[in-house]
Length: 171
Image (tube, rainbow, N blue to C red; front, side):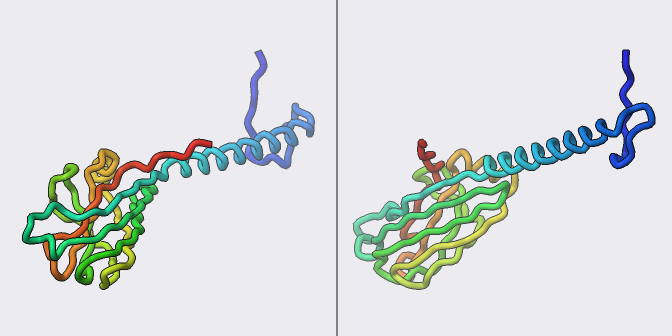
């Protein structure tokens, strides 16, 4: 049985091994480092998950029909625990005032936990970056988060839409 020795300084060949071994060891180390870098890049790419939401009017009664209208869409990207949201909206009957990220089952109102930036107009953009806890990441993956847009004439909500996993495009 042969014994292998590891050396710290690769520029100096072990006494009982030829200098060629040190060159092979450097090549092996370099290949290993490149493999680790490639695997970490693949792992990082796999941790980014995309979501999308269609923003439509909140449930309304006859009295609210003159105040609530509009539509929009949003996309979200989850990278680790950082959720980045971008979207657009139009057709509101009064200027938007706030946009928030809420937690709730589909079709059921829930508590807001993060504010988003929104254009103070009847059409515009929604943006925001939110740091989630690991528990919130799990809730997002279960489609328990929705975006809600409020407006001057509809302070309790005008548009809403749940963040759902985006379908992956097939190659």
